[in-house]
Amino acid sequence: MATHLRILHLENSEPDRALVRRALVGGELACTFAYAANRGEFAAALERGTPDLILADFTMPDSSGASALALAQEKCPEVPFLFVSGTIGEERAIESFKSGATDCVLKERLERLLPAVRRALREAAERAQRRQLETQLRQAQKMEAVGLLAGGVAHDFNNALTVVTGYARLLLDHATMPPDAIEPLTQIFNAGTRAANLTRQLLVFSRKQPVNRRAIDLNQVAGEISEMLRRLIGEHIKLELTLSPDPCPAEADAGMMEQVLMNLAVNSRDAMPNGGTLAIATEHITIDDEATRLHPEARPGEFVCLSVRDTGCGIPPENLQRIFEPFFTTKKAGHGTGLGLATVFGIVQQHQGWIELESAVGAGTCFRILLPAAPPAAVVPAHRPAESAAAGGGSETVLFVEDEPAVREFAVAVLRSGGYRVLQAGSGLDALEVWKWHGPRIALLVTDLVLPDGLSGVELAAQLRKEKPALKVVLTSGYTNETIGKEFRPPAGTHFVQKPYQPQVLTQAVRDALDGNHSR
Ligand SMILES: Nc1ncnc2c1ncn2[C@@H]1O[C@H](COP(=O)(O)OP(=O)(O)OP(=O)(O)O)[C@@H](O)[C@H]1O
Ligand SMILES: [Mg+2]
Image 1 (cartoon, rainbow, N blue to C red):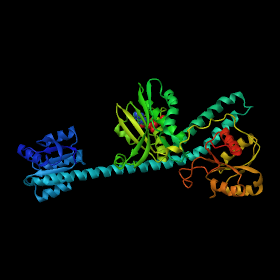
Image 2 (spheres, rainbow, N blue to C red; image 1 turned 90 degrees about the horizontal axis):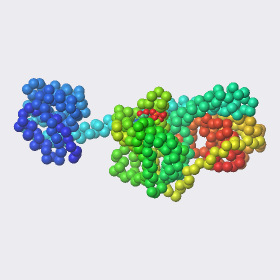
Image 3 (spheres, protein in one colour; image 1 turned 180 degrees about the vertical axis):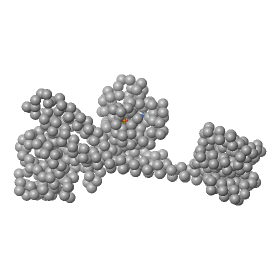
Image 4 (cartoon, protein in one colour; image 1 turned 90 degrees about the vertical axis):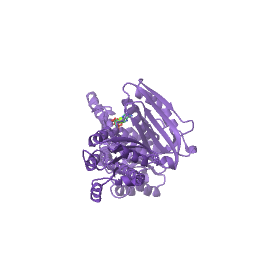
């Protein structure tokens, strides 16, 4: 216990103050004393600042020690309060313990003071730690509950939005659409797309968005997106990119990592309306047992760290607990939805990482994202194949399985307009029935992951492939169901399409699957 202790001593006798000081100083405790000679001075001292420890004589000229104790209990109940008194008497001692005093030490037995102070400080530290753990637990439970709620709503939204944006797109692409319908349809399409983007963020936060993990190098992700970030933050903010000289490999979803960087960069931009510096850095970090104490989620091992530091307005302490909550925003209506950091939080959790945060009002903020490092040899380039503009059509027979009728009708219309022959089913069992009659000519199964009657999309695909190993499969989903696992990886040889999807994304995935191209 080598910390510097600030002790407030309520005592009007100069010789007694000296005796108490002598009993404490030199006992491995580095301490400074502030004195109060009466209740008024004591109250004023508490107003000036909270001490680490309070010592008080019981009998004071203008009042009793009990009233000082009551005041301390009101102002700073967590600070240990010890009576150091000439006389106190058993009855009054018991009374003071009941009112919250930590200990009573008699002036003629001052050798007891140091051990009593040590014990009081140790117990106070334990109480503080327990309080902190409780707060963290409450925070984690709240995030979990909000995540469940958000995920449930987002899933239904996704189905609805697939229909809204999908039909709008179909009509827009229709050659005979009257010109005066184009503008309203475009508005519908754009509003639906914006809503779909929000829904996607909610799904990420609730950790129901599938992660497409590959071994990637964070240096590469940060390097590639930096040009875009530069444009995003504007010319009044200087962007500094400091990449680690060694690779920073992680098993991660490159698109999600870009999203993390974007969300953090946009927040930093908003925090620096009059300009400043945004510094993005990557580094490789080894965390040992000692370092794990600094952060509750930290654990020993090899990690890669992505940090985003700004010289902006900083975050006030009272907001620090709340910034990762969905819909917490300090921005004006229409300027922020409060989903940016919730999304970052969800992504980092899904990658078994954690976030460290430092912020000082007026000085700036630094977010550090730590992710488990992957073995360096595994890294493949993070480039994604370019989207091809033309969506592929074809004439093969497709079995389309989806329980939501509106989504099914829309998708079937899309595939038929691409020239495909489409058979449809609303559940896994229905699909088996269709298969019984038409199996030989079905070239591709497109199925939702979660189906109503107990047979999942993955199980259905496996069952049909037993009969026809060459069957091509495209899985679709608005989220990955808990039973399938939070980290859903599509089985080998299957393609995956995230809802809500646009017509050309569906037809492209169908064409790619049929042609045996790699999934995008
Ligand atoms: N770098 C930062 N500096 C200062 N405050 C920040 C910073 N990053 C986040 N904040 C605070 O945290 C709040 C929540 O951030 P978050 O990104 O979740 O939502 P938002 O930026 O308000 O809205 P959205 O990202 O959905 O557009 C912000 O409103 C802001 O008060
Ligand atoms: Mg934001």
